[in-house]
Image (cartoon, rainbow over all chains, first blue to last red; front, side):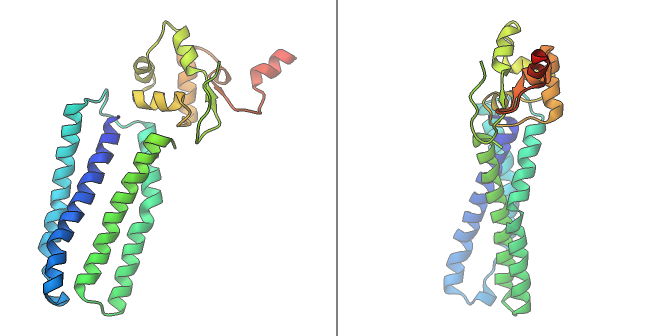
Length: 139
Length: 86
């Protein structure tokens, strides 16, 4: 496994893990509190920051467990990264469009913030999965 | 002998044979010569990645052979084959 592929695994694990943690914190609040009063900003910011830290830690652990020959990205890594970004960008676009629709339709800020956040999470997860498939199955 | 192609490319190559013919050059040594990772050489050899034209030429230069002695495209006769027929 190349250094860049390890980075994609770390990004996938941290992005998915952080969002699951966010849902574990916010969904119980949503069940017992009116949507307009649900506190979601702090968990959203903290899990986002935590995902960056977790990605760095996971990548370091993978690197210690199985050291890479080289830490430089090559032409194939860049091609695969471009492919993943290109194929998953609709997730961010979808989140942004949903956010616009929510604003036009006077949704609660909670839902607007969360559909945009979900768009970013899907972008990270789908992009990472597609990159890993490209690493394993070919590009 | 050519490596059997697998998805997603139809391009076949003789890199493995050429490496063995050059003092059993390792994938890591070839990767270092052309500035890519060993995983990229493995992917190219197995037909899981079509290299850029620049990388393809770099591989051919390492072995000191024309490009079409390294890479082949099925159903298309190569320039060398055409030359030999003439």
